[in-house]
Image 1 (cartoon, rainbow, N blue to C red):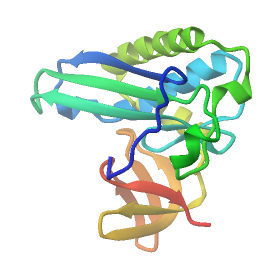
Image 2 (cartoon, rainbow, N blue to C red; image 1 turned 60 degrees about the horizontal axis):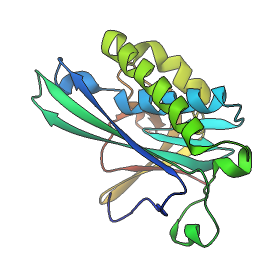
Image 3 (cartoon, rainbow, N blue to C red; image 1 turned 180 degrees about the horizontal axis):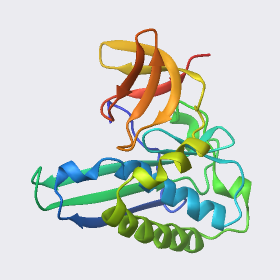
Length: 203
């Protein structure tokens, strides 16, 4: 998105998609990208990976470096049936040469736990993702509001919200029941919706 690409050397990492249907329409999908990130985090913790954190709205970090990214593609009606392709890209094994085009600090699972196989990781991620989609369809994001806040790498930190044409500085105060970012600015608490924006540390 926005001219950037996910660096994906053949046969080294994990790229997977899951098609899910929702009867509540596009309006009912608020927080799904955060729930997907939670599914990845759960899977990695289950595999014994330490230092996993979440970044709003859809990234998974390991020890402060990006490990996985998520992209949702939605088709259907706003208020009735819709389908979502949940896409996950997860770094398993990257060389410095592979990663030469990555413009931010990155992490890979092989450095964190060398004995993991791609099949093992993919199975754990899919298992947790299927559980999370089921939970989300029944309960939405709201029950995981605190869960997310406890794992948010920017919680309580100063950040810059970068949108086309402008930036908004503020302090991350967690997310609301819809999964929207709550940012304390000089105007008070502002609600940031997911879209064509980036969240970056202020320092």
